[in-house]
Image 1 (cartoon, rainbow, N blue to C red):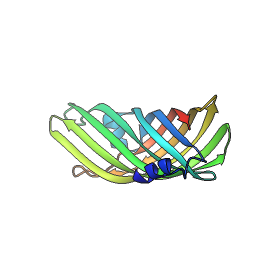
Image 2 (cartoon, rainbow, N blue to C red; image 1 turned 180 degrees about the horizontal axis):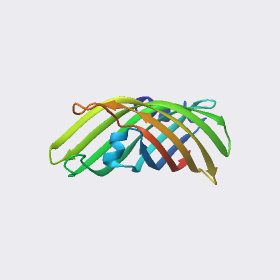
Image 3 (cartoon, rainbow, N blue to C red; image 1 turned 60 degrees about the vertical axis):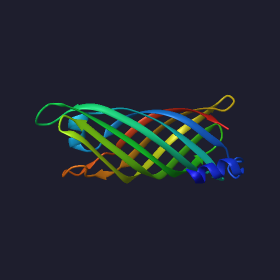
Length: 176
Protein backbone atom coordinates (compact mmCIF):
# COMPACT_ATOMS: atom_id res chain seq x y z
CA UNK A 1 0.00 0.00 0.00
CA UNK A 2 2.83 2.40 0.81
CA UNK A 3 4.51 1.55 -2.48
CA UNK A 4 1.31 2.46 -4.37
CA UNK A 5 1.02 5.74 -2.46
CA UNK A 6 4.65 6.53 -3.33
CA UNK A 7 3.98 5.95 -7.03
CA UNK A 8 0.76 7.99 -6.95
CA UNK A 9 2.34 11.01 -5.34
CA UNK A 10 5.84 10.84 -6.83
CA UNK A 11 4.64 11.38 -10.39
CA UNK A 12 6.34 8.14 -11.50
CA UNK A 13 3.03 6.50 -12.43
CA UNK A 14 1.17 9.59 -13.60
CA UNK A 15 2.34 9.35 -17.22
CA UNK A 16 0.78 5.90 -17.55
CA UNK A 17 -2.45 6.66 -15.66
CA UNK A 18 -4.22 5.75 -12.47
CA UNK A 19 -7.50 3.84 -12.39
CA UNK A 20 -9.80 3.75 -9.35
CA UNK A 21 -12.66 1.21 -9.52
CA UNK A 22 -15.61 0.07 -7.46
CA UNK A 23 -16.46 -3.54 -8.25
CA UNK A 24 -19.24 -6.07 -7.84
CA UNK A 25 -18.95 -9.74 -8.70
CA UNK A 26 -20.67 -13.07 -8.43
CA UNK A 27 -18.54 -15.45 -6.35
CA UNK A 28 -18.58 -19.22 -7.07
CA UNK A 29 -16.52 -21.14 -4.48
CA UNK A 30 -14.54 -24.09 -5.83
CA UNK A 31 -14.56 -26.19 -2.64
CA UNK A 32 -17.52 -28.63 -2.59
CA UNK A 33 -18.11 -28.49 1.19
CA UNK A 34 -17.99 -24.69 1.17
CA UNK A 35 -20.56 -24.62 -1.67
CA UNK A 36 -22.85 -27.05 0.17
CA UNK A 37 -22.91 -24.88 3.29
CA UNK A 38 -22.89 -21.36 1.82
CA UNK A 39 -23.68 -21.63 -1.86
CA UNK A 40 -22.70 -18.76 -4.14
CA UNK A 41 -23.23 -15.02 -3.81
CA UNK A 42 -22.28 -11.42 -4.41
CA UNK A 43 -18.93 -9.90 -3.51
CA UNK A 44 -18.06 -6.18 -3.46
CA UNK A 45 -14.77 -4.34 -3.55
CA UNK A 46 -12.47 -1.62 -4.80
CA UNK A 47 -9.15 -1.50 -6.65
CA UNK A 48 -6.52 1.06 -7.58
CA UNK A 49 -4.31 0.36 -10.61
CA UNK A 50 -1.26 2.50 -11.32
CA UNK A 51 0.61 2.44 -14.65
CA UNK A 52 4.28 2.02 -13.85
CA UNK A 53 5.87 1.15 -17.19
CA UNK A 54 4.47 0.91 -20.72
CA UNK A 55 1.64 -1.66 -20.46
CA UNK A 56 2.35 -2.79 -16.88
CA UNK A 57 0.17 -1.72 -13.93
CA UNK A 58 0.44 -2.50 -10.25
CA UNK A 59 -2.86 -3.02 -8.44
CA UNK A 60 -3.97 -2.84 -4.83
CA UNK A 61 -7.46 -3.79 -3.76
CA UNK A 62 -9.83 -5.78 -1.66
CA UNK A 63 -13.22 -7.48 -1.62
CA UNK A 64 -15.88 -8.32 0.92
CA UNK A 65 -18.03 -11.44 0.77
CA UNK A 66 -20.61 -12.49 3.35
CA UNK A 67 -23.15 -15.26 3.10
CA UNK A 68 -25.57 -17.13 5.37
CA UNK A 69 -25.61 -20.89 5.24
CA UNK A 70 -26.78 -23.99 7.07
CA UNK A 71 -24.55 -26.30 9.09
CA UNK A 72 -24.34 -29.81 7.62
CA UNK A 73 -25.44 -31.87 10.65
CA UNK A 74 -27.50 -29.56 12.89
CA UNK A 75 -29.03 -27.45 10.10
CA UNK A 76 -28.45 -24.33 12.24
CA UNK A 77 -27.65 -20.98 10.61
CA UNK A 78 -24.02 -20.06 10.08
CA UNK A 79 -22.52 -16.86 8.63
CA UNK A 80 -19.23 -16.55 6.79
CA UNK A 81 -17.28 -13.36 6.05
CA UNK A 82 -14.25 -13.39 3.76
CA UNK A 83 -12.18 -10.27 3.14
CA UNK A 84 -9.27 -10.74 0.75
CA UNK A 85 -6.89 -7.76 0.41
CA UNK A 86 -3.80 -7.74 -1.74
CA UNK A 87 -1.63 -6.51 -4.55
CA UNK A 88 -0.57 -7.69 -7.96
CA UNK A 89 0.56 -6.84 -11.46
CA UNK A 90 -1.54 -6.47 -14.63
CA UNK A 91 -0.31 -6.51 -18.20
CA UNK A 92 -2.48 -4.73 -20.80
CA UNK A 93 -2.25 -6.55 -24.16
CA UNK A 94 -4.31 -3.90 -25.93
CA UNK A 95 -4.29 -0.26 -24.80
CA UNK A 96 -6.35 2.75 -25.78
CA UNK A 97 -10.12 3.09 -25.55
CA UNK A 98 -10.38 -0.70 -25.24
CA UNK A 99 -7.92 -2.40 -22.85
CA UNK A 100 -7.53 -6.18 -22.59
CA UNK A 101 -5.51 -7.36 -19.60
CA UNK A 102 -4.31 -10.31 -17.53
CA UNK A 103 -2.89 -10.19 -14.03
CA UNK A 104 -1.45 -12.15 -11.13
CA UNK A 105 -1.28 -11.25 -7.48
CA UNK A 106 -1.20 -12.26 -3.85
CA UNK A 107 -4.06 -11.76 -1.42
CA UNK A 108 -4.26 -11.99 2.34
CA UNK A 109 -7.57 -13.70 3.13
CA UNK A 110 -9.31 -12.80 6.40
CA UNK A 111 -11.90 -15.45 7.27
CA UNK A 112 -14.62 -15.43 9.95
CA UNK A 113 -17.39 -17.94 10.56
CA UNK A 114 -20.12 -17.45 13.20
CA UNK A 115 -22.75 -19.90 14.40
CA UNK A 116 -24.22 -21.32 17.63
CA UNK A 117 -21.05 -23.35 18.24
CA UNK A 118 -18.97 -20.15 18.32
CA UNK A 119 -16.82 -17.88 16.19
CA UNK A 120 -13.85 -19.13 14.20
CA UNK A 121 -11.36 -16.78 12.54
CA UNK A 122 -8.34 -17.40 10.38
CA UNK A 123 -6.08 -15.47 8.03
CA UNK A 124 -3.73 -16.76 5.38
CA UNK A 125 -1.96 -15.74 2.18
CA UNK A 126 -3.36 -16.95 -1.14
CA UNK A 127 -3.14 -15.99 -4.77
CA UNK A 128 -5.28 -14.72 -7.64
CA UNK A 129 -5.21 -14.72 -11.44
CA UNK A 130 -7.39 -12.36 -13.46
CA UNK A 131 -8.35 -11.62 -17.07
CA UNK A 132 -10.57 -8.84 -18.27
CA UNK A 133 -11.36 -5.99 -20.56
CA UNK A 134 -12.12 -2.39 -19.72
CA UNK A 135 -13.54 0.34 -21.89
CA UNK A 136 -12.79 4.04 -21.44
CA UNK A 137 -16.03 5.95 -21.86
CA UNK A 138 -15.96 9.73 -22.30
CA UNK A 139 -13.69 11.76 -20.08
CA UNK A 140 -12.19 9.28 -17.64
CA UNK A 141 -15.13 6.95 -16.97
CA UNK A 142 -14.19 3.26 -17.23
CA UNK A 143 -16.38 0.15 -17.49
CA UNK A 144 -14.61 -3.11 -16.65
CA UNK A 145 -15.67 -6.76 -17.11
CA UNK A 146 -13.45 -9.46 -15.59
CA UNK A 147 -13.05 -13.06 -14.50
CA UNK A 148 -10.71 -14.02 -11.68
CA UNK A 149 -9.72 -17.16 -9.85
CA UNK A 150 -8.43 -17.15 -6.26
CA UNK A 151 -7.01 -19.93 -4.11
CA UNK A 152 -6.41 -20.01 -0.37
CA UNK A 153 -6.36 -23.12 1.81
CA UNK A 154 -7.19 -22.45 5.46
CA UNK A 155 -7.73 -24.66 8.53
CA UNK A 156 -9.75 -22.63 11.05
CA UNK A 157 -10.81 -25.94 12.64
CA UNK A 158 -9.54 -29.45 11.98
CA UNK A 159 -10.96 -29.33 8.43
CA UNK A 160 -8.81 -27.81 5.66
CA UNK A 161 -10.77 -25.95 3.00
CA UNK A 162 -10.15 -23.72 -0.01
CA UNK A 163 -12.01 -20.43 0.51
CA UNK A 164 -11.18 -19.20 -2.99
CA UNK A 165 -13.10 -19.57 -6.19
CA UNK A 166 -14.21 -17.83 -9.36
CA UNK A 167 -15.46 -14.23 -9.49
CA UNK A 168 -17.32 -12.98 -12.53
CA UNK A 169 -17.60 -9.24 -12.18
CA UNK A 170 -17.99 -5.71 -13.40
CA UNK A 171 -16.34 -2.51 -12.30
CA UNK A 172 -17.08 1.15 -12.71
CA UNK A 173 -14.17 3.49 -12.33
CA UNK A 174 -12.38 6.69 -13.16
CA UNK A 175 -9.13 6.99 -15.11
CA UNK A 176 -6.88 9.89 -14.06
